[in-house]
Length: 294
Image (cartoon, rainbow, N blue to C red; front, side, top):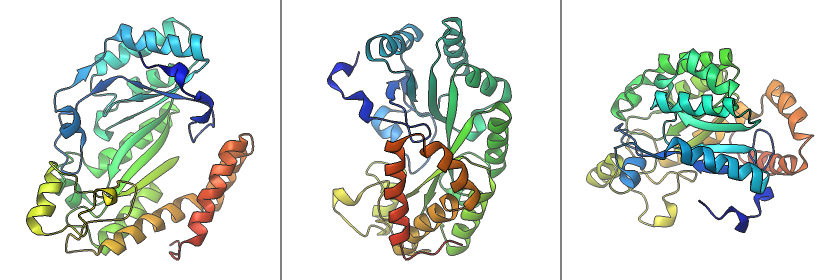
């Protein structure tokens, strides 16, 4: 078990509620072949999972020993092993634990019945790997997912009462100004509660990394620049790296600076001073950007 007594747990808070949380590793490994993903390189493609007893014991210890009842179940695709997920949710309900948790999955691996059970067991935020609103880019990236499945997944989450965070990647092979515009329009129209945007990073040993090296796409050889949340270090020939970084800022601004969205979030932030301070820093960053929302 992690030595959580060594952490100042109150410093680690979830952005959607401002409460202390901790990560619980549920499984590792991913059988999919997305060209940009480092998970199969880190963990392998075979799904390896902790036992149900182990996960439940860790949740209980966090509650009783550390007063933590907010969790991020850390794995690539929580709903990949549906039987395990159902068993975990049912076990949480059987114990009458009043916990809240978030996790991530693929849009094509959700169904309403499972989402409703997850919500009942405390899941209040689900991350979805959207990546792009352009199907051809998803296909080249070997995402094995349709944009229609993303639309359906978000709708199902809304029906189940589970909030959503969409994850988008700009600068994948085939990216153009037109595909960027399409992705931004797609993302803004999905009805997501939160989103995160990244620049595609050609990590070594990923298929994207091999493609970038073979095609001469790399614009930096410094490891510190290979940052999923940083500036683009890859020129795929159809869009400049600078345009990728601009697209990220533009999508952030377009999504988070909508008046209706800001009003809803303000109500939550006012009750959490720490989160209000973090939001202020984020807004200052967006104001300093020269990119206009559109």
